[in-house]
Image 1: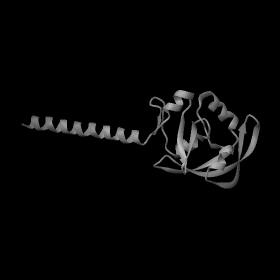
Image 2: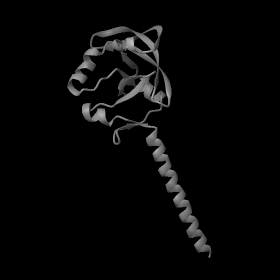
Image 3: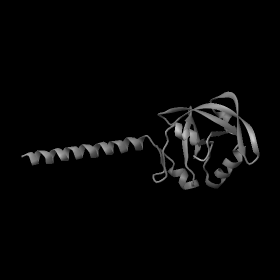
Image 4: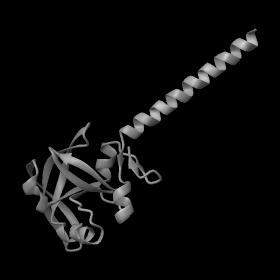
Length: 159
């Protein structure tokens, strides 16, 4: 009799555990952002976020420590000028760039971000011409860490 009770208890615990793991996977997948389509087109992890109702596509770049927004996009966005500057190093040398603060959301979560403003039109237009994917900015490693993002290249999703 004790063996039967232990056997049934084991099955009940196993069933609950499997149900919990499936529920966790479903919830995690619901709270993720896919970059499969853009990755298949460009080979780059690009996700869409929103500034109010304006959709913006951002390249996830863990090799960059800051977030960058293309200066040509500012006329369409809601942001606050911080009146601060950042030193950036690029192909033209060391430059002083404006810093703005902007709110982004994924439909559920809202994040306030600091962006360095740069004219990246030439680079982003090259990607658009080649792959038909419009990129508006870059989210660097500090953003990814602060937002708790996990980039899964096997599933082509960000959690």
